[in-house]
Image (cartoon, rainbow, N blue to C red; front, side, top):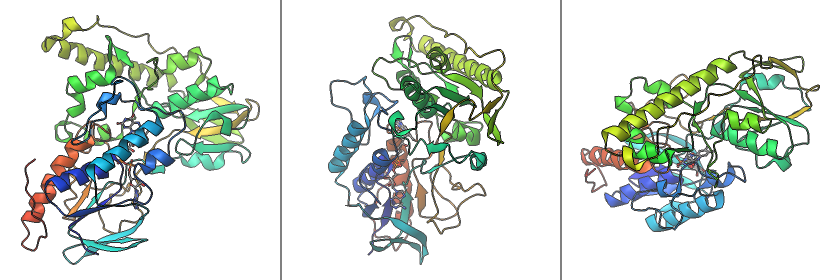
Length: 422
Ligand SMILES: Cc1cc2nc3c(=O)[nH]c(=O)nc-3n(C[C@H](O)[C@H](O)[C@H](O)COP(=O)(O)OP(=O)(O)OC[C@H]3O[C@@H](n4cnc5c(N)ncnc54)[C@H](O)[C@@H]3O)c2cc1C
């Protein structure tokens, strides 16, 4: 089978790319191993709601039309939203088609799937940034009778054994899951490493309103001093609850969650926690205050100050004088562990030598220059701060599809009638 561009993945990134390719008249197919929105169907817990308000789920040609623009979608609503976008885009979609190998072939690529082989001029990897859980090696030393799950497998507290739970990682997922499990009656210990604190609502507006209006979400990858670091930062410690409450370390400590430092080691049935808890919390407070200061300055400079509530500063994170450094799993009755330690992409099927020694794709804003015709979409800070957000992938897809169009157009043997009108 032949086409001009193969797009792999039918999450928001693959669908947004399909919309732009169609707009440019570029022949393509979208291959998806599961169904549309497969990751939202298979790797999210039951109570999860989006961190981004409904108005912020903007995709190319598509915006929120309901009457709850400031609400946060549940998972079934998110899946329904992406399904309806797929119908709107009318992508040339092949679901139930897993890509098992991509390699260079003649002047383009060969994409092998469990439903046959495609040949194309270009390939877009829209397979997601969060495929494989990153669990530290020390997990191997966890006593065998302790149940371990990652956030991609966790569904609800009822699936965990009774007794205490250690949640490792305090970004959005870890904080929300710790909150939910503790409220279910299972005492939670939360191991806290570097995290990014942000209030849900600031001066009467959702923090995502500020990130959008101030242009911070639009900051570009080529204007950031340390892009490698920006790409590795954890998500905001936030939740999309209908009461808009903060889920931060203070709110968790207030309901009884025990805060400890980063999980540093496991030895003889005991967990060892880093002594850096106070430092990482102070750093997170400092950075949050810096962000709020930047937002205040933006409001003042853009004449928005008077329509907003007064500037606020939040209570510093309260940390025990001497947090626990060693905890015996048995004595503390810890029966399960939830690893909320992040994910990495899976390129195990990619046979084009474009990965660095850490397994990341070498790319310049999604263009894999060392292998012309290969592109990637949906990675953290790919072209903008918002690149992994539903709201962010459209702008990236527009620019990358323009690059694809120009690249195809510059080749005499192109099948495409592309225009680079980004
Ligand atoms: C817990 C969590 C909460 C999030 N909350 C928000 C939020 O509130 N708001 C927001 O804007 N963003 C949120 N995000 C970030 C982002 O929107 C999601 O990660 C989203 O799923 C990314 O979309 P994507 O299309 O890039 O990748 P995915 O949704 O992962 O889509 C990739 C697709 O590729 C398919 N695929 C992978 N490998 C193959 C293969 N070999 N062959 C064929 N198909 C393949 C997968 O089945 C999948 O359908 C959240 C992320 C996580 C992890």
